[in-house]
Image 1 (cartoon, rainbow, N blue to C red):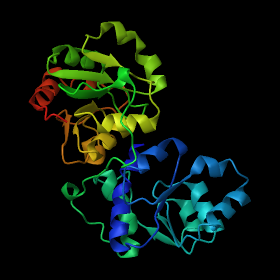
Image 2: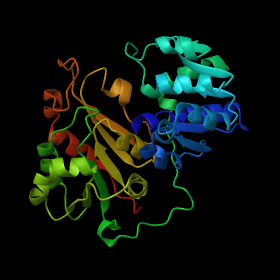
Image 3: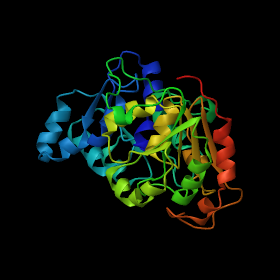
Length: 326
């Protein structure tokens, strides 16, 4: 989910350079609802649906679109082979993947692993062979998502957002994709936030609902445990109507930043999963991290440096957020 959101600046630059082009994202099925929030994307194809077909039939499906250009943004050997088999004239990938030498006819030389740039900046490097500059300062790469005009308001009373309070979403899980702030720290933070000012919603997937279900009885009345109650399409709309969000480096964090709500990302001081590569990008996006460097090579989900990130520091940031009557 986060990878998809951080690829959308590519779409914006491509549309600026080629305004009449028809731009299609090839994504996993569960992420498709995200794309309707970004105006520069015309259509999407489910990679899962294609993989379910015999390979020759999947090739014919791609051939029917008459694509001129393929960019393997999230490097994948199967999709690279699919693009070549469909005889797409221009196929772009990184030179660091051996299979790109077989399936791509334009290769850009850079390493994500060794780079000090943000993921969104690294994605833009793939556009260099199109004559589109990738040297854009991070502060100028602001994700901009918008609610589709045909979206209906949330109709479930139990999920309705209290208009007179600051509507804060906390998303404690990361689905194993990032280092997490301990759930005990979230509970301490929630208990300190004024019930007269804040209405708090704990969100997550069905799997995370099972994982965190033991905290339900520990929550105060102004906190609502709604993990596993929404499909992604509804969650996106729910998120767009909130005032703020706290999460670690997850897809929902990046979508919240793109939607322009106040977003606080909690990160370890680790180059692979930290702010250098994964900080949220948006007009109201912030982040917190520890000083120094994480001593863990891979920075596991339950990392000591995240445990050291104080509740006081997070509370101070959130307490400063003002309710604007959204």
